[in-house]
Length: 115
Length: 114
Image (cartoon, rainbow over the protein chains, first blue to last red):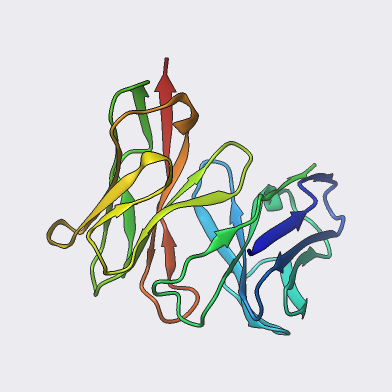
């Protein structure tokens, strides 16, 4: 069966510090990978998605970036965090190029507090 | 533009009473529809999905949802609420095509009173 892991689960970072959130998927190959952010009182916002190694699409311009160095690994990064980067970050995966009928599966999330 | 609307931001029910969480979507063409549940500080878990097969979809934990094309609705129901159902629920619409075409509702927080 497929599983998704993301870490760390929680972190508190000072403004201006770097960020690295990691996500890995097991039990499938060539998944579509996603990073979402869920800010307090808001819905989910798609940040990045990837359909293959080295292929990253950005949905929202910001000081965050994403990389996919391996087929089942997706990394969310920042060189300098802002207070507004605080939130709950969710990694997710799906199969197939077309989302119609395909399900997105989510990790357990990472709470980021920028102080 | 495609959209999804969860009509209630907060629903409160007593344990053992029915649950109704409402979701409407805009209709350019037939979408896939999903309901996810999120317990506090957790990721989203798939409850059920509709993909143009049977219009009444049964999911986990006794939840079900009915796709009504004429009303562009996909409301989530459960006959009898349990305390463990207290969580936030998201209605999600997929119109297929590019990866960005997955639209999340704002969420409905369900509270269950003893």
